[in-house]
Image: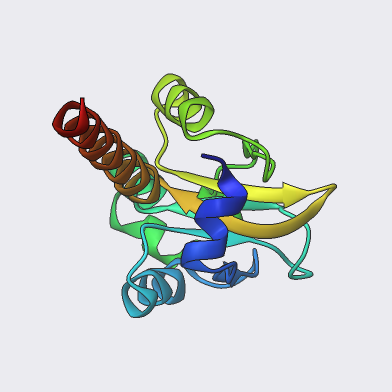
Length: 143
């Protein structure tokens, strides 16, 4: 199973933010969209960074409440790891575990085409395991 199949199921829409909006507006966008991270893109296609709940918590821990007056550009992760549509679920599980992050933008060339989360990966992996178990049960029943 690969990323293109996940995106075909869940869709390719990605919530983005501009780098100069305020952190409080970003927090509102996270809440309103019920997501844990937003891609930062000033043009809507290229990836300038990613802002996650973890980035905001880290900012509060380092700067105190004053960080809530900062801009997205001040707290976002700039070196964003991405994947292609060809990446497999196993590839993503390894990448996310090693990198200790939960959201992975999907790119085609340099253009943003989707995002997958650890929840998407776990959901897909559980479905695969259940399907494999059913196939084994069916095989045993017909043997």
